[in-house]
Image (cartoon, rainbow, N blue to C red; front, side, top):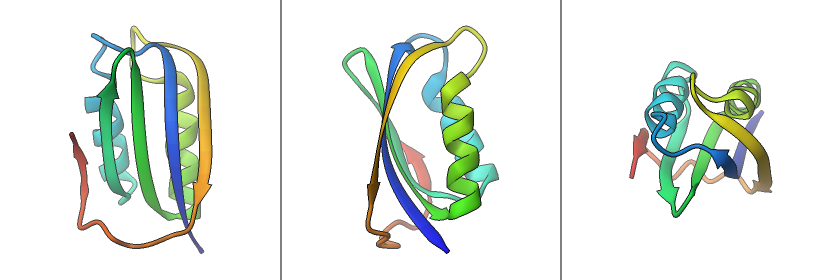
Length: 89
């Protein structure tokens, strides 16, 4: 089963290579979508196999070394299969 999520990650997520770490993890998990900075937060749109999306969510809760996630808002969206790959924006 496939799944699509929109994630807003808050906390110390700037200047710790959070976007690069999410991109690397998403590619390992064969997910599609994007990650970008939005002010002080990081925003992610990811879709793919349910298990892989869940693994990415678990990674985002912790983040890379130096990150400190204080909250994460997750919205479940209809799966669209609109992306070719996962990328940083």
